[in-house]
Image (cartoon, rainbow, N blue to C red; front, side, top):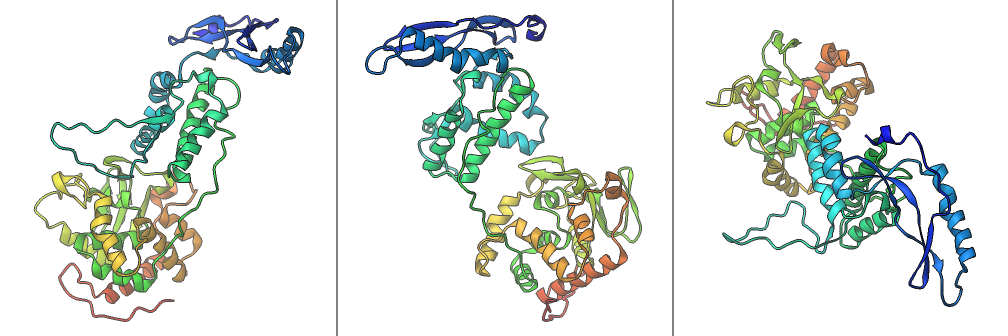
Length: 442
């Protein structure tokens, strides 16, 4: 709308220099965008030039020279885009959410909705515990959360780097991690990037030069073969199968929870999966269950086939004999109401307790996925095959639909699975116990 009305740009002259208290103040006319997206001519925000009274006071001539050098002379060259008079909160609600966030995957939308209160309203006076659940009596309302340093009520054009620096600095002082502060900075940057793209903001993105302390990342872990064997011996049937698939197929937990029966081929011959041919003893990774919702996999490269070792095939066949939730569209690892199991519940109830018992309190789903890369390297699987099996390759999409890992890789994976199964003394799908053997790490 405003683009059609702004063909003729108006240049600055002297602006309006005036006294306010003991200071010289300056304002100027500029093109503005109102809440309806319409362009109009209005006064800018007033800026301070310097003192007008007392020691070091500027004369009017000196004040006009400084006003020209520091402000007016730059406007015609660097600030031709009409400046929005919407607040950040209004822009987020009217433009950013429906035009940017709405097109993200479910996980991305949830992330932005969790971080926007920090950007718009500020940092809580008391740190909110992650995942904490406080119970209240019937009829009792939770106490109001007092927040400070938010930029939601500042006009979009008036936000400065200092405003965001104070926001993230307050987060750090109140006990939030550097990673949490970085999330808030990234969300704020995305807001102003979208505003620039849509012509609602000009100038430098105020989040660009916000400083953060060095990130302290957790030490990455991978399990040895002996640790995998010990872990599987500690887990119940279903969590054990999920952990085994994470180690042997490198599927992440969202992909494991998102497995549907129609995506598994537990037979000796190929089957039709949607409009694709699924080879024997393979799983087609096409979707995931993340943050309580179905969605596509994280990246195109993760649309792939994964091989199922014989022990996993036997266990999956046994699981398929349950009385319900065995339809083509049902999740393999179904919980209450037929929805996929909650990965966090499995971690807290089974994975973490087993990890603490075995001296691995850091144990997580991602550690099991990382274990695949380590064990595959020990078994001399090439880096190219590993990238493809893990969904990290950059090949064309066609390769992810049609390529099947080589027979050599199949034999290596099966041999590795046999070491784990025999070492853990696991029963197969027929109820037979595989003799205990001492695993040998290559």
